[in-house]
Structures are given as structure tokens and as C-alpha cells.
Image (spheres, rainbow, N blue to C red):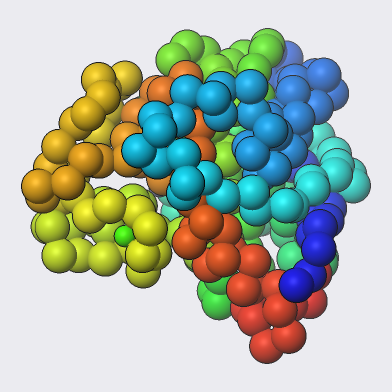
Amino acid sequence: NLGTITIPVIVHVLYNSAAENISDQQINSQIAVLNADFNASNNDINQVPSLFAPNVGDVDIQFTVDRVIRKSTTRTSFGTNDAIKFNSQGGSDVVTPDTHLNMWIGDIGGGILGYAQFPGGSTATDGVVVGTAFFGTSGTATAPFDGGRTMTHEVGHWLNLRHIWGDGRCNRDDFVSDTPRSDRPNYGCPSFPTTHCRTTDMTMNYMDYVNDDCMYMFTNGQTERMRALFAPGGARDTF
Ligand code: ARG
Ligand code: ZN
Ligand code: CA
């Protein structure tokens, strides 16, 4: 096994107003959530129902802020076409993506909380994007997405996780054996048990679409899928 994996982070802050130039403290609040969630030490982990308690995964990844890049931009929103990742489009160019997780924080617009690039894509756009209103747990973070879980979800994608319902009908797979099948995302804060495809949905998984307060676990299978990327020959073995 690889032991604890350390991922240094480059944070790009794109701001069009003073308020969007978020504080170091807000950035640190986000990194603290990642370090809790990726070590199963989040303080809501005890809310996992006993049905799913054996499935709780400790990913054992530590995130550290290597550098914060702050850039004023004339753009009021960036959309999801990766403009935020390029100086030439009012964004900020990626920095050493083979050894660092790049996070871009700015106004995405369109009610989009965040988006991520899966492993194996272009290095120029590798990383995750999270809206200023959904980043960290203080400052500009807005309920019910002020728990830092949008970033947990996006980093899950960046580490090869699919949505828990497989983005399809009951038989569409998320390629993880210990997440129950489902045919749809869940929203808000579902009551337990919520049943689709004749099994109890794991609505509290970070890769569902529920509110920040209502997601609090990865599974062992998801943990294996993420950590496999860092083994020799894996898509993120340069970290
Ligand atoms: N919709 C976004 C995505 O699919 C993020 C969803 C995050 N959910 C949350 N409760 N913060 O990547
Ligand atoms: Zn997603
Ligand atoms: Ca599954």
C-alpha cells in the first residue's frame, strides 16, 4: 500500500469584485474540509446509518496549499468551457498539473456549483473549478452549499469517481461495487431509507447531489478506485 498520499494544491482566485477576492482563512476552511472528508474524520461521519457503516472508506489523502494565485478579471462569469483556466481568456493558467492539484475559484454562473476534469485529460485544463459562493465554509460560502462539500465532490471526480447513480438507469454503473445502484440523483436532505432500483440509496455519499450537510462518506470501493491512480502506471502516478 501507498500510505498517506499528500497532494499539494494551487489555488487560483479569480475576482471581479473585492468580495470575490476571498480570504486566506476561507481557503484554509476548504482545505480543512478536504482533509477531514478524505480521512473519514469529518465530524458528521457518525451520521452514517448502520446499514452502510461497514462501507465507510478512509481515503488517506492530505491536501496542502502550495500557492495561492489571486487575479483580478473583467469577466463577471466564466461558464464551464474552461475559460477560467487560461490567462488569454481572463482566467489563470494551470501550474505544474503533474504534481499539483489546480483549483480555480470564480463565478461560474448558471447555478453551477462546480465541475472537474477526470484523470487522463489534457494537462492544460487538469483540475477542479468551484464557484466562489460554494467554496469553503466562511466568507462568500452560501447555504445549503457552505459546507465545503462541492470541492469534496469535485475532487472525487478528479480522482476518477463517477456519480453514485452511474448517471443513468438502474443498470448504469459507477464502477464501484460497494455503492448501491440507483437510477437518479437525490437532492436536498433525503430521509432514510430512500429506495430506488429496489435497494436503499446511499444518499449520504459525497458523489450524490444532496445538500452539503447531508453528504458525509466515501466507500471502501471508491477509496480503492481513487488510490489506484497513484500506484505505478496509474493516471496520477506522477504525484
Ligand atoms: N453539480 C456538481 C457536479 O456534478 C456539484 C454537486 C455538489 N453538491 C453539493 N452538495 N455540494 O459536479
Ligand atoms: Zn458531479
Ligand atoms: Ca455501484
